[in-house]
Length: 395
Image 1: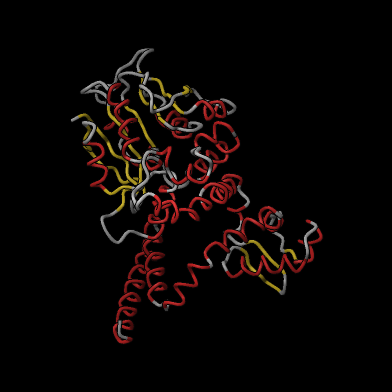
Image 2: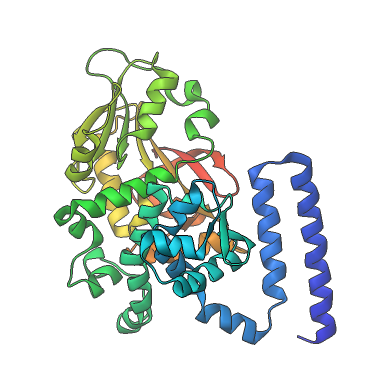
């Protein structure tokens, strides 16, 4: 691209950034903030030289490594109490070498994870505390130990596979580096892995809940059955039951049982916490669904963990349990646009690739659901720009 053309494109992106800034100033909504951030990222990327772009690729792992060091050493915990600390204080308190503290914290200052109000003096900012929260910290550990190593071997794996999407999961990228075991296999053997994963998933339950953003009466109430055997909602892969506990809190007047169905290790962990009237049932979605004729079967960010073949198996088991004219499936997932996909969605998709899963476009969802005799009858937007709740019925 000629320099003049590049300058013209940069000006256009500046104009786009200004429009997004005005929209954010006018509403303060999080979707407007995300659009402003995406516009800023586009401008920053466009201003990169090829060397800038290459350097960014080379040095991407360094930020997460520095954060992991600072959390392991408890330096961020010390700062999170609100009081600034010098490098000497951080070193003396934790037995570290002062010069190493300075080198690690230098990058975290540059990355705006902490601030440096004075020479070799560090203070927390609004981003520091997320790295001291156990749910988000477990997420960092999970990525360090179970995503990053797979990504490093992904080029080798895809070359060996002839550059095809991984399927079946038993022969996917994760088993490729872990002696033939999937992450889920290892989580059964090492419950701490499942606990960390669940903690990370729960930490991400921030912002508006889908239960507050759809018409519950429209989805659930028409023809709703009562009685001790009536099942209102089955949350498949529902973890410790956060969604159903909230559903019970908001809509406990609706008749019918609420059931969380998840793997035995997860259910064992969930039983250590209050259930609040929610039933817990060990269940593997690749086996026949034992609860027949529920009003709704709910899947939240489950299918993006799996390839189409596995999703079809789980959906077929659910279809067999549905009662035509009464039961529906609710799917809460990310929906990618056909083009101009934002950066976060792209990296989430490649993260899913390491586990044989994928993020899907609307066309992908229609094809997947149609292959097992299902169709989307309504789409509820539950988080801009791409988080949706599908109401799905039998064709």
